Length: 124
Image (cartoon, rainbow, N blue to C red; front, side, top):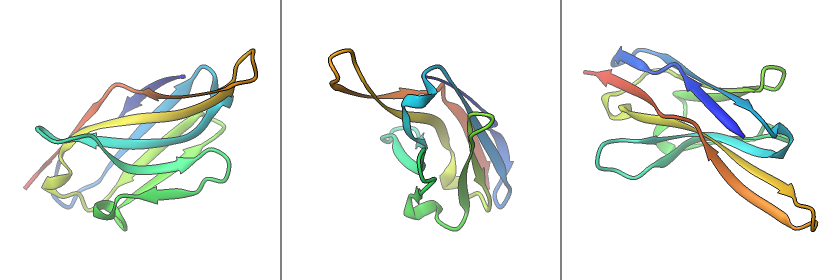
């Protein structure tokens, strides 16, 4: 699975941005997609995720009520709407896809694909 992320940029605190991630390749192997972020000097953490089957979502506590993850199956995209942005949201955001398929031996193969990062900068 290949992922192409877009939509980062510079925004003032309180503003909004929308990130998009387009998936291609073995799309039927995708079990879930999500957005992670990594601030300088910190580890990469999950921001929001959405399952491929039911569309169930989960969010980091720090973004609940402000961020919304959604999917467009027809366009094979997942988006992250970010509202009420705060300076602490500043980070490189990465799109990810968890994959599961069965190989020729009928054994499960799991993996994770990453898109290129997109920088989100929130000024105070």
